[in-house]
Length: 264
Image (cartoon, rainbow, N blue to C red; front, side, top):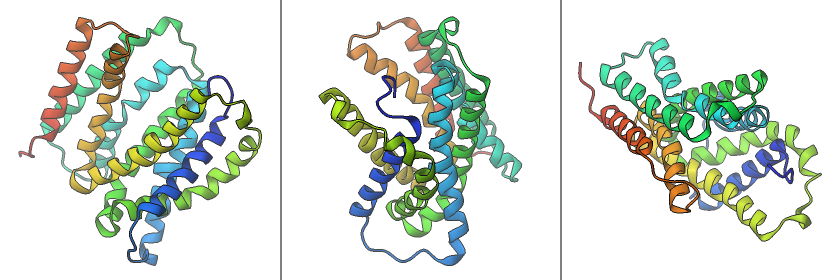
């Protein structure tokens, strides 16, 4: 996207198609989706794939990396707020763990990017926030389908239904992509996004939701900026500093508290 080889909407279209094909290949024969679950499946498709991805990529295009990163780490807090508004009783450990993780991730993002060099659009920030809200709602609702149909079966139909709205927004940009101008590096990066961050990430996330609660799964988003820093250090694109240890300690402490069994 950065050199303008692939537009944001086209990128989402390619992601949805590749993930749907891969989930279809690796999904064993299973029972059909019941009509009573179709409405929830459409909601999860919009919140977890179509609306979520379109808002994030277009919002990121208008927003700054700093603002987008900070807004995205609000997802676990949004999960807790949505569950609270729906009547769920949340424990003190859940809130403490979530806030500690948010503090650690936010501090690391601010330290890594610096707010003075980023120019952001208000519309872009709103789009990223809407994306985070949709994804939070998706994390809460999709376990109902996963528990009934399995992780891969649910993802196959979630991406399949997402194809229609994503196709409408992305077909124009996809026709403008000049694949012949891709270098080997561009092809590898393109394949990584289509396979690793689309198919594998959603597969592992759905499997996690099958065995854990939405608030715990969402808290692991705090590891993203920490892991990005560790990878950058290993690639010698960053230097290990005390801020990494402080942020890492806060994040892992938050994850530990969040994973504790509920107490009244």
